[in-house]
Amino acid sequence: MVADCYSKEVQSAFAKGIGQIDSVAQQKYSKPFVQLDTPQRIELLKGFESGAETKDFYGLLKGLTVRGYLNSEYVMTNITHYEMVPGRYHGCVKVK
Figure 1: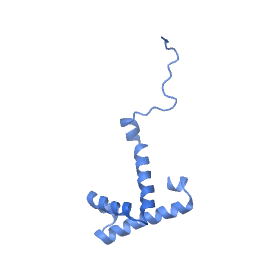
Figure 2: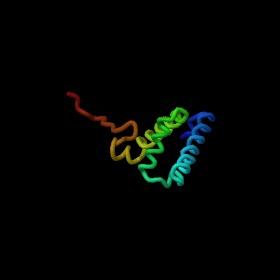
Figure 3: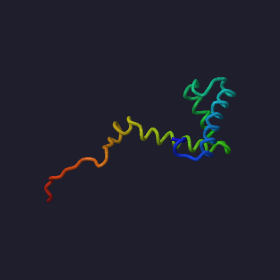
C-alpha cells in the first residue's frame, strides 16, 4: 500500500522508520523486532508513539495497520458481514 499510494518521500521515511524499529529492538533487547514477545513489542512501539521525530512515522504505521485489519477478509466476513455492491436486489416487493 505504501509503494502504490504514497509519494517517494513518504515511502523513504516509512522504510527508515521500519529500520529504526528493528535497530532500537536490537539495541534494547538484542533481538530483532519480530522475535520480541508481545509486552516488549508494545513497550518499544509506545516509545515510537511518544517520540518527537518518530510520531509521524508511528501515526502512518498505526493507521495502515488499522486500515489493513478492518479491510481483512476475517473482519469483512465475520464482524461486519460485508456484502458486495450493490447488495441484494428485491425487484418485486409490495409497498404498504
